[in-house]
Length: 196
Image 1 (tube, rainbow, N blue to C red):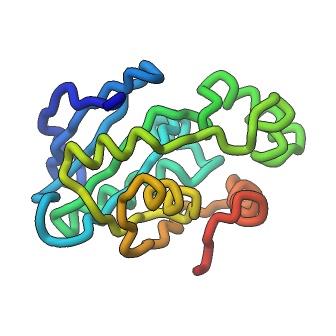
Image 2 (image 1 turned 180 degrees about the vertical axis):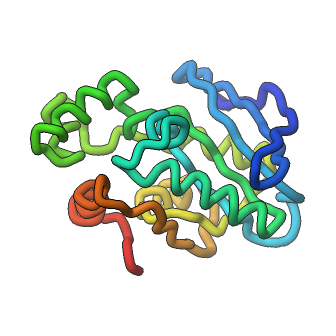
């Protein structure tokens, strides 16, 4: 397995105390996290979020995207249910990295949308991949999920990896005047499922 569990600890948060699990990916040399709560091995499909790292949204409260809002909402829903997992995947900027993301933001400041900005930098619109989630969910004994996402690619990726997606839960939070165009581009060019 290229992605292996390294260590676990408790992580108290404003939403409740989660178990934090660290994973190392030998193929990419990246480290990923899982934040879990409750007994994941029994009780049916697990409330799950695949969340790609967004330093600006998750830690710096950026209003240019909906990432930080989605992460907080996912943690709240899991805490309310007392059972679930967030896989926090280290693939910043849809996989292009932090500095390139800042370059893409600069192009957006000049009028490009989020897809055009990535493409002007020589990247695909979305460079993320989700192969590491199979090993991570396997370690946590998760075989089927209720996936909190607006992105159909995540459903397809998990299905291809043999993880059963029993339900999709929309995660439409954080819309504001700074990210309206960004969200519209995700719907129109990346086929995100809003209002469905």
